[in-house]
Each structure stands twice: as C-alpha cells, then as structure tokens.
Image 1 (cartoon, rainbow, N blue to C red):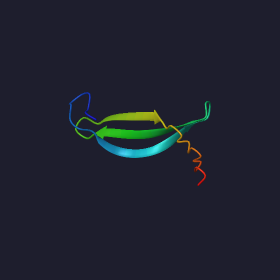
Image 2 (cartoon, one colour; image 1 turned 90 degrees about the vertical axis):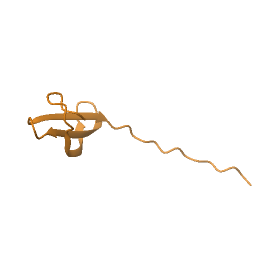
Image 3 (tube, helix red, strand yellow; image 1 turned 180 degrees about the vertical axis):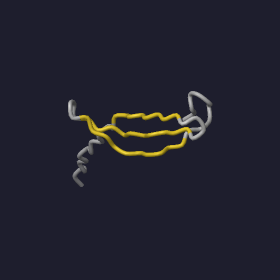
Amino acid sequence: MNCPICNDIMKIVRKDASYNRSKPATYDRTLFRCIDCDTWIKIEVPMKQIQTAKIVQPAS
C-alpha cells in the first residue's frame, strides 16, 4: 500500500484478527505505517468462513 501523503510504500506493522460482537463477524485486520510522514492506516476485511463440503464417494 502506498502512503496517501508522500506516495512511499507503507510497511505492515501488525496483522491480526478482530471480532465484532454486535454482529458476530471476524475481520482480518492489517495496520500499515509510513515512517517518513508518520501516517497510519488500518484496514479490516471480513473473513469468510470456509465451509467444508461433505464429500460422498461413489459406491464401487
């Protein structure tokens, strides 16, 4: 991600998960920082729960 002020590449400071209690959802949270101009950006993207499908093997 590029800094909106100086357009330099921002480094990832932290990656973790967050949880919203009001609507039960988990988010993948990433925190970016530009060292030159001390700009911080936090992005939270909803995690999609992967549902494992039950595989049925054909009879042999």
